[in-house]
Amino acid sequence: MITLYDFPMSPRARKARIVLAEKGLQYEKVIVDITKGEQKKPEFLAINPYGKVPALQDDGTNMYESTIIMEYLNDKYPNPPLLPADPGQRARARVLMHYGDTPYDGALGAIVGQVFFKPKGQADQEVIAKAKQDLNAGFERLERELGNGDYLLGSSFTLADICFVTWAPLFGSLQVEIPNHCSRVQAWFKRMQERESVKTAG
Image (cartoon, rainbow, N blue to C red; front, side):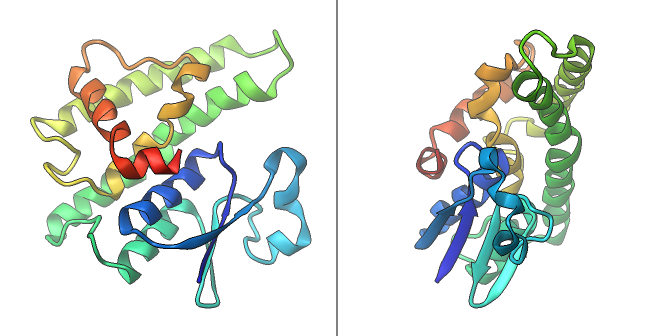
């Protein structure tokens, strides 16, 4: 039995939920309330020593780090495949996943830190402005990557797409907007948010 240690608002935990939904896998969900510090309790640290969500248990194996969890699920439960079979395309997917996990995630995380975790009126607007500048550069890169495809790797929805869509529910609260000159990216986000797995994941 798969057990997912989850927090509903976490974009990183949402990655695991989308993959589980795409694969049609049954699992037990355990909510770890990070607002109450439950991720720092010894019993959770025994599962994920980093003290972060998500974490996953499957057949006695503990896993953490959201992208590693996604790849594990795709390897163990291969249908439907969420990475290309072609080695070159698979490598390209991993490059995009790395981009989603580092500059993109980092910029959005910086805004979250200011908007949600600073006292009212004390958010550092320079930090927010720099993060939004980085995000806009990222959206422009993604506009080029998409080309005429429905998804980053053409017609197939992959783990690379998942690395980006999970933040979309927070865009409104963070006042993040995809620039109008990135019309492919706007359409891509809309397309992804209409997928049943993404809606199921919340």
